[in-house]
Amino acid sequence: MGRTLGRVVAGVVGLVLLVLVALLVSWVWPPSAAQQRALAALQAPHELPGSNAYATVVTLEVEGSPAQRQARVDEHTRRFQAWYDDSYAPGFIRGDAESEAGVPPPLPVDGAARTPTADPALCGFRDAATCLERVRRAPEAVAAALATRAPLLSRMDELAAHGHYRSPLVQAPPSPWPALGPLAVPLGAHALAHVQGDSARALAGLCRDAGSGRMLMAHGDNLLATMMGIARLRANAELFAAVLAELPADAPLPSGCATAFAPLSADEAAVCNGMRGEFAMQQRFALLMDRKIEAGPRSGRLFYNGRKTLARQAEALAWPCLPAARQAVAEDRRVPLPSLPAAAWWQPQCLTNAIGCILSDIAGPAYTGYLYREQDAAAQLRLLQAVLWMRGQALQDAEAVSAHLRELPAGLRSAHRPITLSADGTALETPAYARQGQVLRMPLPLAASSP
Image (cartoon, rainbow, N blue to C red):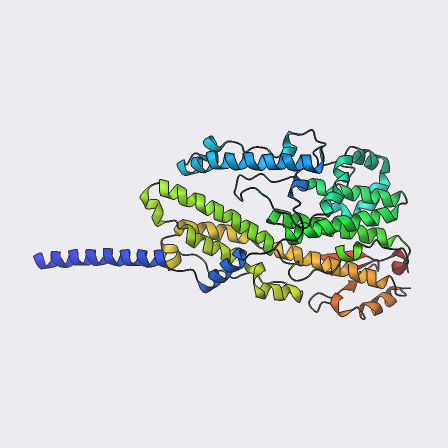
């Protein structure tokens, strides 16, 4: 009996030791090679060109000189940081973030008299292809809506002078985001200028705003700025092509158009900077989670590890920054989504990080598809460049257009989604990646699309 009891005790002790060793191994388990590459890509230093557009974007609807508006942004940054340090982090640690943190200090525009951005008379980013029709139906209503937004429109030159967008606020869940909807307002102004006969001003404004959209897309520090930059670039390109289609083939183009609508490089046509911003936010969240776990029951430390969670999240975020994705972008191939190993509680990296593995698996799929939007922006610029190239060609009929498509310069060709003439002969098309089964379009000059 004693010998049997001894064996049972020894077995239990051995099992406990085995569990402890497994937990220790899991705790010190290093990031995989793929995770290390992902972390390096997301944390790599990168330079941002030119001046910062943040203050201009935040105060597009605020009265005052650039210096006065910058001072208001600086004051808000100081107040937000003090609020975050004194209120949010301690509340999060105690588990009562809502009651302790409250509402963060509002952005300068939130306390200013402002005109609502949305107006049924104006064009939005999604209406760019039909914007000229909308304006022609009700030019007086468009003019009246634009008159109330004159200060906002006057700041578009200021925005175009900047080279990047970087928020001075800490990248954390409660950080307020500027309203980026006002960036679509100038579309109505450009369309109205063309309808009223000032096509040169319309083209110049479209090229200017496409350039600032390109800046937000390629040199923004968060995913929201990247996506809004893509939307602005694509909308201005669509409206530019629609205006151009109604002009003579020899109509001069403003000098800034060549730069604004130049083909995107592989670096520009990836959402790497946006993903870096997302990772920075997740780093801050992981830090707060670590503090909350430390302040809670000891048992919680067995189920969450911030270091391991960040490594898994980095693998889900970094794929647009890695060489394979960039090569696919350069070749205009649809970038394959990353194949991440599914989490299981018994895996070494998840045994002491069950909560982190579950959270990272939930968040990962939400980021799929962003790169496809940027690839589609690159494809739309390629379509526009093809239209511009054809302006100097003899395009009497659809057959002539198709013949010239076979002679496109090498930089405008894609083996994976070639440019074709639409069935009605009025536009150039290429397949979309973000919404499979749909096509991207750019209208041809009317002379080229006539029977």
